[in-house]
Length: 101
Image 1 (cartoon, helix red, strand yellow):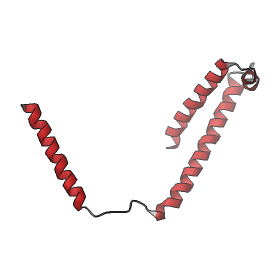
Image 2 (spheres, rainbow, N blue to C red):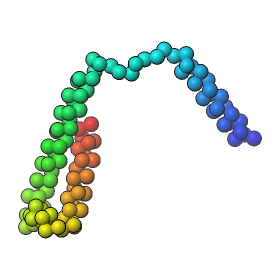
Image 3 (tube, one colour):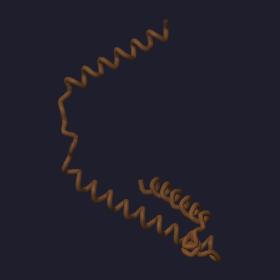
Image 4 (cartoon, rainbow, N blue to C red):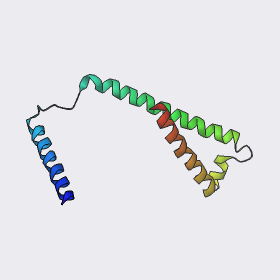
């Protein structure tokens, strides 16, 4: 019986919250004064992320694979190199997202 009382209380609090939403003043949700600055900053951080990922791939190619050319191996259809490169790109994107954000 205790579990039923808990769910009844939660349901009643949900109904009260829904009633309060109906009486709240409506807002448009669009703020044009912040739109352009948000758009520009998003574009700049996106470009920064792309440049950092390309730099990381070039650095990885130069440092760890000095005897192997990624471009030639990908041209030959080496799926192992493609898998390692895609894992590197995804990992760097994850790290750069958290660093830039």
